Image (cartoon, rainbow, N blue to C red):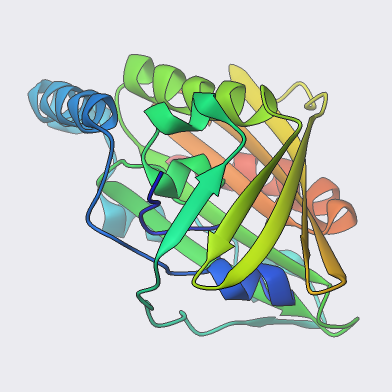
Length: 230
């Protein structure tokens, strides 16, 4: 399976950076069909029901929300590398970005990532998406369910093999729906552990990823800000 626009929010650990921003043009047919259907439904929704990307960007966490010691990271340029995944049939039905825990395929989105002075493994990233409640619920559920259905699988980035393990985690009772998982990437004798939690609140989904302690520390604040009135 070729993957498109992979992987977990361009976090800074070696194995994640090796996968960040990779893309090919091959996306599974049923993933394209789901995306097309979701986009059409979003386009038919009342304009007041959904937030634009610009409006979402105003609801992202910033340095003031996070506190002292955080600096925003510049967006990484997209790179193009052949990426394949094996050992998880459920991921064959997803587009590549979602399959590896990366960006969801919703057009209304805003993103930011931060590094903490504590070190290169002290990073946190946030993504916001807006769509109809039904589309968000189905879209996020199918991704998390597919990923956690495979406790381990392999990803080949160019000539670099990466082993990925996933573990479903309980999510805090925030919003109307929530999902959480722990991903471990192992490559070249080094490993990176990323926690990823998503919360749907109305027509917005908040995804916070990074070191487990930072995700836990900032998730509720991210949800509150994303749910705030304009």
